[in-house]
Image (tube, rainbow, N blue to C red; front, top):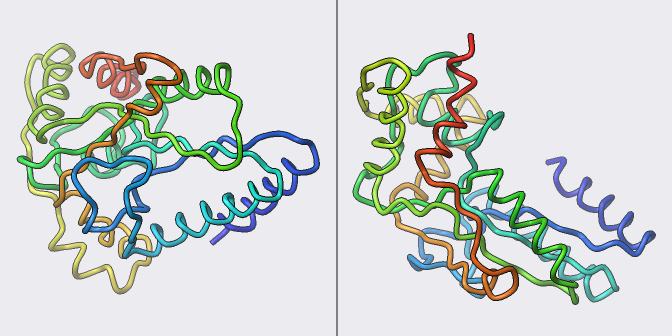
Length: 237
């Protein structure tokens, strides 16, 4: 993985310049044993390659902090937003296909909660955190984002926009986990996608109280507005 060498370079640059590091964290650090509500101190027991790499990276940042490199980890759920391509929203729900969506393939149990992070909201939270807080050592903050109590909420938001744009809703179809099971041994990227399936089978919500205590109420664009902005490029051609 290129992630660790890139992080080493960032740590070296921060140490040389005296700058602090703002590191974008995610939920890959947590394994299937994680509690439904995730705080900054929740145990991290990843079972996937991506998750283990993430833990190693954060441990490297902790070690660097002991050597004077201050670090803030801002942890978020699954990204979505205008221009975001390699995400569960784009690649998962819509199969990575461009243009007007024809259907939605929801990857998990529709009755289980899932955490999402709208990128413009994340950017605002990060900017406010940097402006109002001086990091000391290694610190971690969770960004609440959009917690959908069930998949229906996101699907309804998508179809609200589809009704606005096309006058009709699109159907929800089964995610092709069976097909992925067949090809995962031969296509590494598909295998990694399959490894993350457990995050769709267990509920998880990021607790944002610590971040709120620093920057005040967390930015949260209404879900319909966030989905509208995310889907907008699909209707431009």
